[in-house]
Image (cartoon, rainbow, N blue to C red; front, side, top):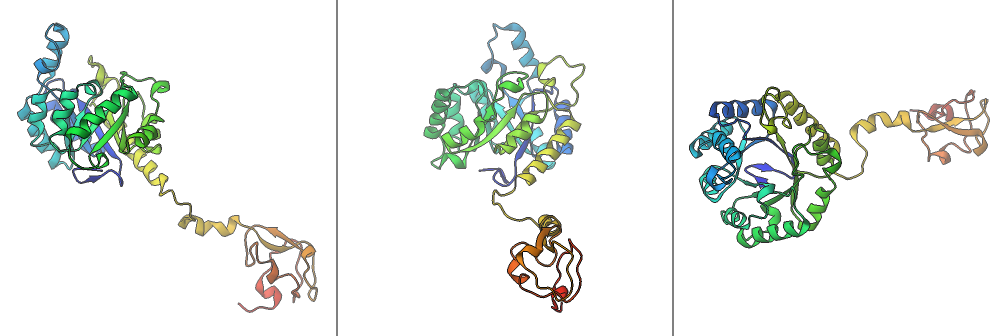
Length: 339
């Protein structure tokens, strides 16, 4: 699966989830994009919404907060340009139909939040646009995921789901307790739906992200902020600061390299050190020149030397041309062979 020019099969997509940690400030949003780029992530993600199509005005406190935190569609377009200039993929989670329409011109992928997995009208509206989709599954039952995937399949591009859909394992708790993260759902989702699977993290450390990559996650989302202290909005507390995000990027790349291809074969570094680890054929006792080597006269010691295990037939029955002390690794010149 590709998102923009990023091939998820070759490299895990690391996403700094800025969300609404800008708290309504365009300049803060710009700064967070810049810091995310410095940390080495591949992409930044926001939340895009009109308050009236997101939460009820009857919840006055929440409505006031989401209104205060909202950026305009034009500001998101400008942020997309900034991110692109910094080499980042820019995308966002639209929390309504109008927001999805506004993003269409400048995002290469749509993210659908866990909370909207059952909002089938939004799923169908986004799928019909023909772009790749990332769907988070926090709080969902298998039955609900089945239904959501079917909506996307019916309304999305006429291509295999594996080419354009990514499912995120996610636990919709903020923060999420480690014992509830259930990373083994990653291979389950991959096998059940035949699509690429990622992981959206709400824990307070990087451990789950590292384990998720080892279990096959091909995209990671981690909340991102410039600082946690002195902040009231709850998303900051479960976010990575720039130095923590940079460490996550480094650790993920090391894990990617360590995972390898799955084919069991000898590595270049093993080729160098293996002769010191393997055993070679040595004499078991003090022997004199002119004696003939028998099976009882040999033993196997490290390092490998010139006659490794398996070369016994090359030494048994041969006559020594020099005295050898017990434990001496037999060399070809000890048998009169020139090297």
